[in-house]
Amino acid sequence: MSGFAYRRRKTVSTVVLGLCASSAFVAVGVLALILGFVLVNGINSLNLDFFTHMPTPLGEPGGGVANSIVGSLLIVGLAALVGIPAGVGAGVFLSEYAGPRLGNVIRFTADVLTGVPSIVVGVFVYSMVVLKMGHFSALAAGIALAIIMLPIMARSSEEMLKLVPRSQREAALALGITRWRTILSVIIPAARRGLVTGGLLAVARAGGETAPLMFTALGNRFFSLSITGGPMDALPLRIWRYGIGPYSEWHQQAWAASFVLVMMVFAISLTARLVLTRR
Amino acid sequence: MQVGRGKSAAGLAGRRPWGTGNLGDALARAVFAGLGLSLLAVALLILYELVLESRRSISAFGWAFLTGTRWDPVDQVFGAAPAIYGTLVSSVIALILAVPISLGAAIFLSEMAPSWLRSPLSFLVEMLAALPSVVLGLWGIYVLIPWVRDPVETWLGGHLGFIPLFDGPPFGVGMLAAGLVLAIMVLPIITAIARDVMQAVPSSQREAMVALGATRWEVILGAVLPYCRSGLVGAVILGLGRALGETMAVTMVIGKGYNITASLFQPASTAASTLASEFNEAAYNLYVSALVELALILMGITLLVNILARLLVWRVARSPEVIAE
Image (cartoon, rainbow over all chains, first blue to last red):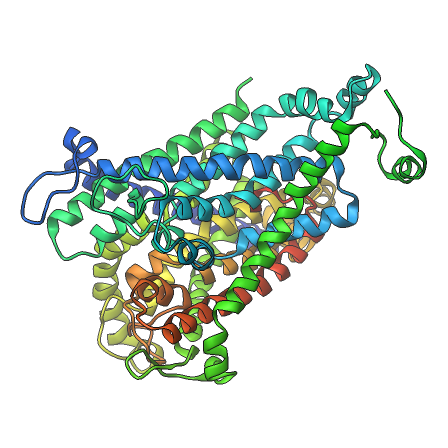
């Protein structure tokens, strides 16, 4: 073995692997950079009023985004109420009932639906719900987010339900329990940790979405609790409106709202991870 | 418990090891089947509704909508070419920037990182994927754009200005900024899928290369990458699918321009950004219809790209749960 060729190969290996390692740190560095900015700018304009007050008219200092926070919770809650049970049900169908052919068709559709741009879902719900109701509403926004959660939830719950050992199903059936009782009282409880994780991840994903809300919830400067009554605000919409606006007070508020949104999304994702790994 | 009845029991016996004919089971089966099929229904309904709502624009412009270069709501003339061009070009910029870094990071996470470093790094990458796009857009407006204007665009314009891509005044907002933001968005997606695909490569493949005296890089180049090639291509295409439909962050930095120019410094627009900034302001039926047709085109492009990607990824890893995120 010639020493020179060997050394050259070693050097190439070291250099390329070094480049790979630095790419990994670039990826993480970008996250740190963005989070750092959101953190620094957000904390400066964060105070208690921010959570408890409405937006003030222009020129008046202070004010907060209480309406947006409440609106976000309502809309995402509504979406979760529809999207998560429906998604788990679809997951049960995929893992417990569907034959291979129909199963693959539905799996494929779910994957394709996950890839549909969220703004297209917004346009769809606008023409399906908003136009038919005659006005914007939190209900329409909830439906849009539920459509986004549904395929995510269906695929993740299918994976989780498949992890339940076959022997548990067989044991339940051997005891004479009917199939639907087996699913509800044995299989779903056995997979609940995975299902909760999937649900939380779907909520985190939906909570950060802006595009589907623009044509459904629209946004609203005032406080609203009415699900069907008219436009409602949400945190991402508020960030968008303030972020592209011309006033520096607005920008400060946008940073603070971003901080709150990012913390919420990360907290939910983190909880999802902990639920899954906790023994 | 009654075990099946006649024909249906025989039919079930082959495929399903358990199943009976009582009422509760029949009901549960119907409910779960309905929920499963709802996915199909939603997908078809979206397509149907988009076609229905864009019929006005389809009958007014026909195929010329795809090639028309004028998007002029005042004159009621709509052509989708600038938006389609912007969508494709910004996504391609994003891929050119993100793919090498993603693959490098995936190689590091899958092949090199010590186990104590692997899971925190993977976690951070996943957090980057969870960052709401509107927050990234806000960061884009106040941090990225000033940086892109100066030094990036002034330097590129000064040194490489003879290339049409880097010609023109540095605006900051524009195609280049959109490509950068998209690169940040697709980076964690491609990284996560590529890492999973690489980890699915059996270690016997690596061991065979090591036994032949290969260096660590030669193992990766000669055994790991060829083995999962189609999965990696799938990961990149999934990233592309995400980039094509990304809305908020792009809308906030691309600057809204409707000219097709070679220069990456000019304001441009994508299908998604046009929808985001004009849909609520569309004042007459044809305008709304043209925007819905734009949504239909966007959905068509992403469907094609996603179907291609799923087929490739599915061939490698049969259960790509990362993709579901």
